[in-house]
Amino acid sequence: MDPLAPGKTLGILGGGQLGRLIAEAAKSLGYRTAALDSSPSAPALQVVDKPFVGAVDDAAAALKLATASDLVTLEWELIPVKVLEVVAAARPLFPAPSVLGLIQDRLTQKNFLRKQGFPQTPYGEAATAAGWKYPVILKRRSHGYDGKGQCRLASEADAPKASEVLKAPCVWEKLVDFKAEISVILARGRDGATAVYPVAENVHRNGILHATRAPARLPRDVEGKAVALAVEIAGALGHVGVMAVEMFLLHDESLLVNEIAPRVHNSGHYTLGGCAVSQFEQHVRAVCGLPLGRTELLEGRAAMVNLLGDLWEKGEPDWAPLRAIPGATLHLYGKSGARPGRKMGHYTVVGAAAETEFDRADKRLLQLRG
Ligand SMILES: Nc1ncnc2c1ncn2[C@@H]1O[C@H](COP(=O)(O)OP(=O)(O)OP(=O)(O)O)[C@@H](O)[C@H]1O
Ligand SMILES: [Mg+2]
Image (cartoon, rainbow, N blue to C red):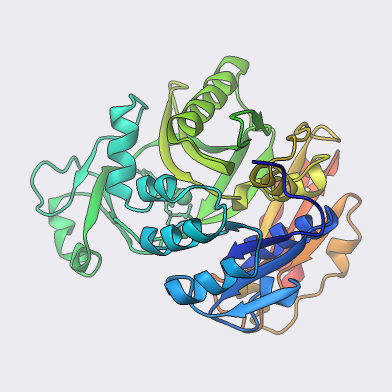
């Protein structure tokens, strides 16, 4: 298959901030863009050439997007495989439906990883409480994100807390006492070539990513292991496009895989501004069949802090202090309706100030709140 030529249309299933940032990168490469989302004011629909309003799990709507596109990709992994197959029958679709099929259900994903021999925390299907290794975290098998549909139980005595989450099929995982959370963002091309970004170190709050710094503070051999794990996983899946592998770093410096995101990832936002080729442009390059670009940090380090709806409590935040930081860039996603926990934007800091800004992210957010 030839590379997608400039002037052709890249279609994106999903119209959130990830879709918007993919579309902006695609446009700067000379592509026309289309996106499908159920909300006409979705972030990506504001910037694409051809906005489509409809549900991403509606095969007819997805087919309309595909027909208006020359090649299709996605920004969200939970689109039903049946819908993806309809799209793939009409236009080239990357990543392939089979990749999404392995990842969508947490249990299938974990079983896939286990079969391939990748290290994970003990887990199982949570249909009954038998065999759970406390403390556990229960997670919905599908349709969980940002820590939604999860519940932590310290011991059997906590079991009543789980009744809400257990209304849908779940997995249990033994809670990990980690030293740090890291993620590896990589791109895999149609030809199997990979490009890996510097490992990111992530801090979560209430199950939502709060801040990322890159490079992660890791011994070289551990960094190498993390990268090797992620590259092997991408290869085993036959993934095409950008992918993130979230991992736990344990106190003995061993690594466990938490989960795979077969798409551009929040913890890779630092690459936009931090690296010559962002994860968004890299994703476009990978799916369109272009050579992958360079991934090193231009100024040695970068940090990213998420801006959640909570910050809008008293109205639009005061962005002046952010704009005054050398090397800081603000990205807002154009969402109206700032609800607590909703990702409204993020800022990145590159170069010398990145480390201190990562450490003082909480203070900075308080200051922006006004
Ligand atoms: N087994 C575990 N032990 C300890 N902490 C965990 C475990 N599983 C998840 N967490 C914590 O909860 C966070 C969210 O979990 P997970 O990544 O599984 O959920 P998610 O809802 O898919 O999130 P997202 O899609 O935003 O990455 C993790 O980043 C980690 O901080
Ligand atoms: Mg996660």
